[in-house]
Amino acid sequence: MKYYLLLLLNLCAISTFSQINPSIEKFIKTSGFENASIGISIKDLSGNDIAYYNKSASLIPASTLKILTTATAIELLGDDYQFVTQLSTDKNNPQHLIIHGYGDPTLGSEYLFDNQSAFLNNWTEHIKKNFKISPPIDITIVDDFFGYNGISSKWLKEDMGNYFAAGAYGISVFDNTYRLYLNSMRTDTCPLILKTVPYMRDIIFSNNLTVNYENQDNGYINGEPFSNSRRLVGNIPAKRTSFVIKGDFPDPGIILGETLANALAQNRFKINSIETSRQKYFQQMYSPYRAVYEETPFYKQLSPTLKDIIRVINEKSNNHYSEHLMRTIGRKANPDIYSDPLIEGINRTTNFWASKGLNTDGIHIYDGCGLAPSNSINAEILCDILIYMQTKSKYRDAFFASLPKAGLEGTVRNVLKGTRLQGKVFVKSGSIANVQCFAGYYINGDKKYAFSIMVNNYNSPRKDVVRAIESLLLGIF
View 1 (cartoon, rainbow, N blue to C red):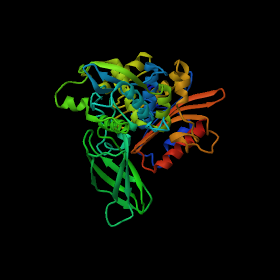
View 2: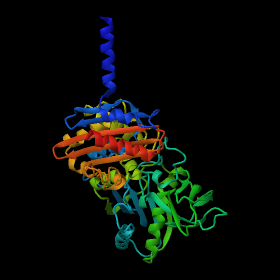
View 3: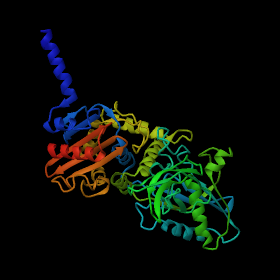
């Protein structure tokens, strides 16, 4: 009797680990997966398991974490939510222009606007109506809505300073990204720095770049937030008269102030000073959120709606937008001036899904975009969130529309391309070092499924991992 009881317990233990499926059996035996950690959850939209493997194990999700962030944001904020940037005069100084940011990541964004500078022309027209040409104008950029911890404490130092690790602040502009132009025609020395766009007068580069002959972009820009010192590392293709790598603005508030000042100067305004709340805060003149000026608003710049923003996040895998959403969730949850909006956003996110009956024990996250390698989540909860968004959310259509079609769009335009699943899989990809994940839907007429596939610490080329995942999806569906 003991033997049969032990056998039954062992069979139960096995069934919680994997639901045997020939495609999954083949997948986990893929060459290079011998030491990998794998999590798979595939369900119909009623929540019934179709196939799974290690579905409760918390693994690094990379950018599939954006499924969690965008779903939470649209549920809590609504698909028509818009960020605000407010232009005001100072009641006590009519020539004091105050630009007050409330976390809009889209101001001048290349992902949503053909003309990134169009807002400057619009602002200039409104400023003309509210300010005199003389005396000179003082400009203050109030950038403290999220405080000044603009990056996750768990992000890698090697990522900081690059455009994909741009900080999230109350003021962001031009995606908080600049382009560094380089000339690599000479191969006996480091590539020549040509210019930055936009121009940044205070930035200092330590150039440690080399060149390669494989036509590969391995160039990176390293640097701390609010520091003008930047280090160029890695290598870029040789024999290029102009090659571009991208970095993040050290101080977006100052960039906005200087860019606006230039636009105003072209319209005959004179500028007396440009300063940010951060500068005054670190000079200990006041704390964030403390009312310093009596603002009289005269114009409010509204962002595109959240449904357009999450489309960019999930199609382009936009880290910058994602980090703003997580902090906005946090700031809405706790407006206290000394609270950390990232931590508050993470807590609010976890609590929200727990309130919907999902098991959140496997969620351990430190950002909203998936860049931190310390993040972990299990395949099943990503699958369950996807099911919830299709079956219970009133924002179902907007969320579904945010996911790109495999083989056709965004970061998955080459995934499943030319197969019978092209255009029928709507999916978010995720990849960082030794991590490859996909999460989304398979929709084909009445056949509707959600899935999450996570592979960590594989020992094979990434393209082989993607091919193995494609074969798994083709086998399952």
